[in-house]
Length: 213
Image (cartoon, rainbow, N blue to C red):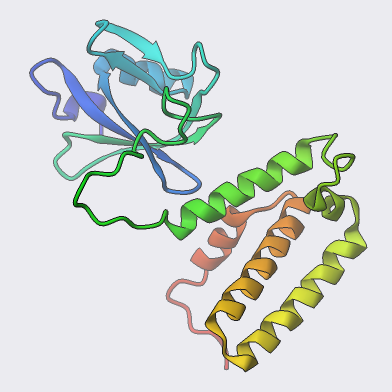
């Protein structure tokens, strides 16, 4: 769909929902004009229209918390856009990861989604791997990255512990042992330059296919 075919409002604006491309977490809601959308498409960085200042603004231009655009789609009515991004830092000016963190009185409260938790864990692991001082500070994750034999040993140990927990039937024990296995599996993937997106891509290739017995 061409930008001119979107349903711009009377002020020539359209709401833009910004979502973390990795975790699916909604980061913020901003507004785009035709000019800011064109700038976003040209630069690959989110650019919005400030309704208060009446000017374009590039997310992270001063804070460094930029948002690299990975996909941009519109809804069925073409009156809103979804911008999926890789954020370089917090989306909110308060320093919060997402602008949506204030609960409304009387509304139910739910924990963050499993995908957000796993995505944040993956980002933390990436940070440990890239930090040259992490090993010196006693980081267990850094120790795993530095020792290939230990990485593989822990996968075997955690797999066995999960099996034992499953046989015992304790839900809490199963969850904790599974969490240990997932953590170590993500470390192993990171050591190969891989991550959750690679697992998701492999799963997508299996959609609609029958597994051999």
